[in-house]
Amino acid sequence: MVEAKIGQIPNFIEAVSKKRLRLLMLKNNIRLGGHVKYFDFQEESSGKYSCWYYEEIDADEVTKEQLGMNGEDNNG
Image (tube, rainbow, N blue to C red; front, side, top):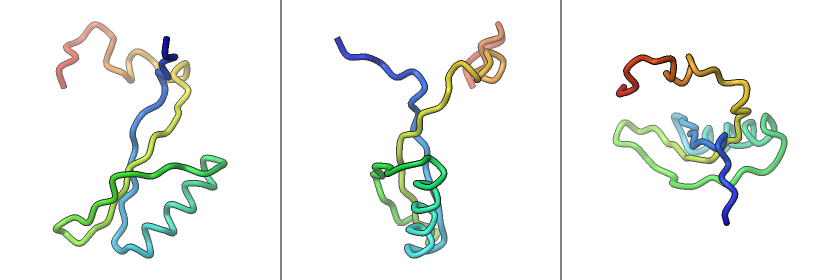
């Protein structure tokens, strides 16, 4: 059986140049305290560069209200 990580969510970094994206990736590694595996590097038609990574959040600190699970419509 595979253990699910409920607090692991995709996140992204966006920058105006490749050089700036690399700098932001380094800052992100420092913020998260280690090496991050980035994927899906993209160059947008607007000239921006982005990449995706997974970030672990503390699911216990996210309230039901923040998640939209307070009895209201959850469709967007």
